[in-house]
Image (cartoon, rainbow, N blue to C red; front, top):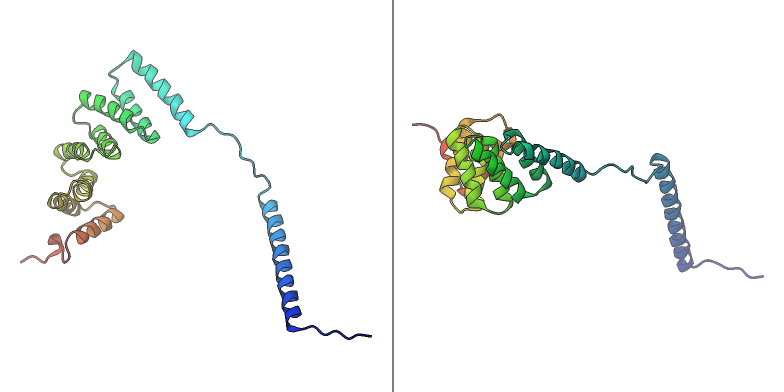
Length: 199
């Protein structure tokens, strides 16, 4: 008859095997629960946004063939190409829209955004400057100019002018106001000119 006693190494091995077995059981149970909650891993085929956009673009282009200077169609094409990230094509339709109505701030904004995305920062700033000439209280155009002048065109004083103009206009956009204060605070330390006490 032999009497065997387990040494500390044998007990450690058994503990490791037990922990691994428990982990595998938990993994298996978790997998079953997931499958019960999410029975199908296949996705329903839906027309992609791109193909839907292309269908709409085809319809708009057909409409433009019959009426080449139809402003709403030109602007809709600018919007569609912007959504697709086709900045050059979008810019072409925004330019045509502006040629028909140079005071159309929506088209100027679209062209400014397209130029920005093509990294044509000077041209982008020109469009937002035109918006500010037409609508001096357009806080979004001032904000865009502030960002362009500060981060891309290295004109911090012009950036400050436009950021401070947005603060003067006090739009209801709290996030925008916080962001502008941060941008101004990062330009120069200390109190903003617009926040200094009068007198």
